[in-house]
Image (tube, rainbow, N blue to C red; front, side, top):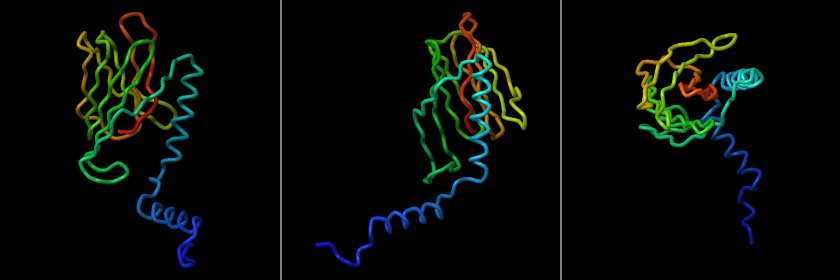
Length: 160
């Protein structure tokens, strides 16, 4: 028989929600940034530029926490037409690997008030490896233009 002093399921859920709202609130501006990213992604797709699905492969943190702790590192994988891009973000550094390794032009774009602005463009050689050690934090995406004649594609937006 259940103890009448035990909280109900609804009371437990309210308690859990209250604790999470106090300890891990939604970051200020997150909803607006995600809506902007979705709008820009839809505009890019409407323009005929393929926007591929991002798969979060790994997330590791030096400090415990549930969101964006200092020292957080993320590894993401993007895929399009037989070409894969593996990206590791750690602090202000972005390391990338194109698989299979083929010459590619990579353009880093930053979200600005009314669209995207190019931040850096790199010619990636036959090794498929590239790095950007000093990126400012913010909402970014990568545009890849394979030198093989394959169609260009861009990643969904992600935050550094």
